Length: 380
Ligand SMILES: Cc1cc2nc3c(=O)[nH]c(=O)nc-3n(C[C@H](O)[C@H](O)[C@H](O)COP(=O)(O)OP(=O)(O)OC[C@H]3O[C@@H](n4cnc5c(N)ncnc54)[C@H](O)[C@@H]3O)c2cc1C
Image (cartoon, rainbow, N blue to C red):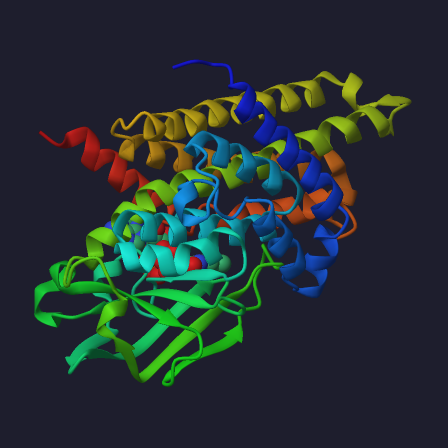
């Protein structure tokens, strides 16, 4: 593994940083306060190619490697994790799923608009009674003529408030457990499909999270993605790689918390000198930096292995587990360095502390990452 980035990867990082500083940094606190999605900024990200990072050029993407996408995610997340949540769902979950499992017709029909932000996607696996145990889903899809009839509820679906296309998992053979799941593409205005209210969240408040309801919703057979009853594999393979995107988001949040803490420690005085001159604060900063760098290497390694077509499943889980855990720790220390100011909404570290928390939960909780790592370690 090479520890330097290629000139192209450096360019992705630099341009994403510039975009984030210009377009996201000034509005991120407002999005959080007003519980508002920056749809205009997401569209700009789409027009610049950031929503089709790894989609091949023939389907309207920019055909970049995974590591370039990860660098973009990291840089956007440093400024606004809410917006990067929609970016990761679009790239990692929707596009990747269609590239990997869509038919040629489905790819040509949907990818060009998703990759350029003309349309937005959502990935609907979780239900009110099944999250980690995804195979415990209750939503059904029953064949009828040239269609499937969907009934059920999905919960906590990112980007649902504005998405045009929903990748929905449902049971097509309820007696077969995870071998009876299929994946369907449902367009927003399909009769029998409704999107519920926005959830009032602790963090990433500038992202959209809603419930979905399917009541005798007729989906044409041609919208089946991948093979019938093989949808669980579709979900798991997609999430394996999606985790690297969330890990990069956590890394970006942690880096932002470190940046804020360094700056504040230099400016804030106590007992007649800057905080940065107290060794107790220096040690905190040193530990934060060490954690951020360790997370960075793990996240980049997982992306690099995917780019090199090596088995990256365990690496993706290790990266997600570690980066998300340290994002919470580093943001917590940043709040501590800010003292009382860190507890006040006007300061970015307060938002980073809240935003970091979700990365330990979605796309597989930390406990589920440990299960994946252990399974990989112990397999024959
Ligand atoms: C803001 C937000 C956005 C989301 N976006 C999406 C989305 O776009 N699409 C989507 O499909 N889902 C989405 N989710 C759902 C998310 O992926 C789930 O919340 C997550 O997988 C956990 O599922 P759960 O909430 O049902 O918790 P549960 O599965 O009920 O878990 C509860 C606790 O038990 C632990 N646990 C469960 N099973 C085990 C086990 N076997 N061993 C040890 N511990 C275990 C978990 O780690 C957790 O700590 C989102 C959630 C949130 C909050």
